[in-house]
Image (cartoon, rainbow, N blue to C red; front, side):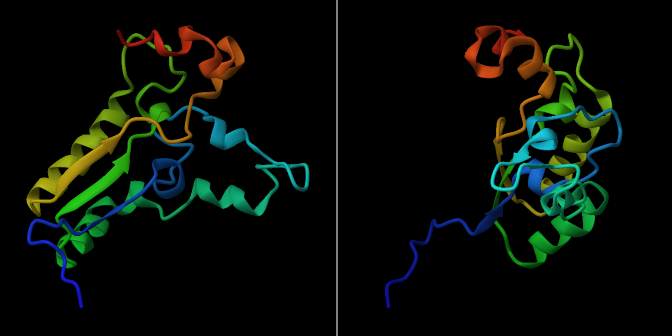
Length: 148
């Protein structure tokens, strides 16, 4: 049997729009994931079974116990995404949503408690719907001009 290298890091990864839940709390904005269509049936997400992602694993409300479990399992690394719409609800605000920043600050503090290295992905299919409506999403450079 081949063994893992000594410097191999054990951990996990999640995607905010599939894991956090709390899609209608603390100022979070509407993302493209919130309004996507189920193309095979033509049913929009408000009526489809996959709409349950709005609750997801409810990490937003179970942050401490989730990361405590990561620590108990010996995770050394955790790759996660930050929901764009939790920090900038519409995507073009001048100031971030403080509640969103506070959530991620609590997450990073908890990871630090267990010496779990954070690896953050800044975009994972959660573009603010407002930027799609206003600029046609990534088809316009205007979509990436904010926050600079």
